[in-house]
Length: 173
Image (cartoon, rainbow, N blue to C red):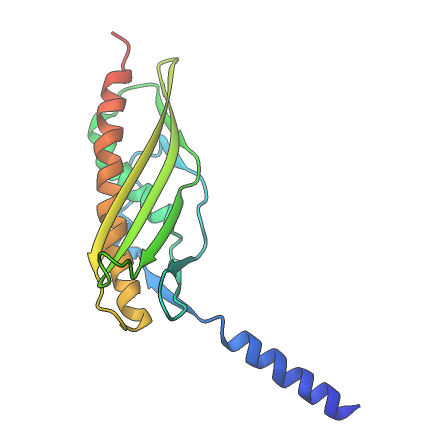
């Protein structure tokens, strides 16, 4: 009986050791609370880089949605007017690497849906962003973690570039 329990314990530990998540520090993207009238829902808690030979799972801290929210808040702060609110669903995010046409690159695809309420005038918008950066083939997990910071900053800038004119155009005339 003891042998069975020991074997089961070893098997369980071996199975758990393959699910290694690499922490990603996104605190450099989180700025002080600006634009509290922009709210982003929860997003994925971890990201797996698809398309690689090895398994790479990234655990963003703070969560990816909080970092994206902070970047968007900073970008649209200057466009605020009274009675403006922006509510966005949680972002969808996917990381992909090792494509045939760019084996030394990793790509982040971001998407989210936002509802802009401007003094009672409501509009709804979908936003998508794709950003790419180089990560040499065979790199360790830390290289992908560093890449995520760059990719998220670039993706947030692309989404903000679409969100800013939508906010300005939502102002009743």
